[in-house]
Length: 365
Image (cartoon, rainbow, N blue to C red; front, top):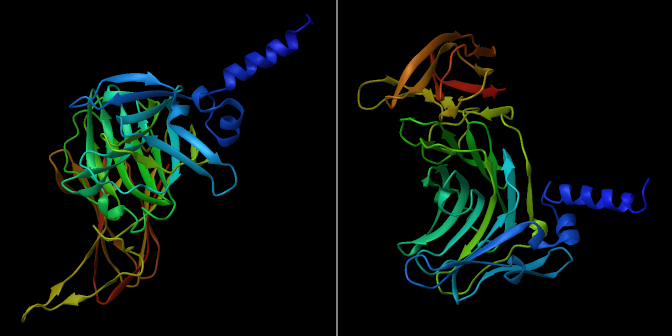
């Protein structure tokens, strides 16, 4: 072996590997600027004049014992400081553990997630905290073709988000994106040109319709926009983790009552009696995504026999009955989809009351 070839091979291997993941040990070894490009915007009216910089000038860690001490700072001399990974991530997973700052000025923003650099040109999938109309709002964004769409999920913000550490995660998938706060799914983006249905609001999770061209191969963004006021995000490099994920990860969704954080399991269906007329009630689940999955099945069980109806969202923005089936008392009913649908939900009407649901879940693979 020629002299020095072993060292040359090691150097080449390290060069090829340098962007293979973003983790604490890699930051320690290679530094912030080896993994991130930086874009800054000055305070010129409107969006500011943009230029490049070193992210290590604005993202500085001073404490190396847990809990780590660090600041990602947008100084008062700038409108925004944004870091973008040098690598793009196909079906990436990005998690940020931080205490979000208190925003005080309209258009102040914190961005965490994926974006094909500025302008959402070929894609964006990110969480954004921003100040609008005098109040903080949390949105999820997804889209492309220089047009990102948004869904407000402010109600999902933890009450203590400005004082306690929480983890904010965006996960790219074949059908779009998933968004999490801590371990809770708070939103799903479903992507396909020409989609036509009304967004589903949070809780228990929002569903954003994205009818834009979109790539699942995106760089990661972490941006602090103070809009001419100093704004600091207390996040240390060890609290940022990025890696490749799966195109279509298997999923098990527990079914919720529609637009609530209450599970269908343990829900008791009773007969309401408004006035002099008894009206039999039913239980309707929150919508769940099916788009892109070949294997789709529902497991359901209730204390009384009845009828389980499966409804699907059509691109006329209407729920249509897809199939119905009988459910035997205290027996698990498993239903497998043979066709395709973007979203679905179930409606259960028992034959006798009261009736308690004991199983309600969807399996996707």
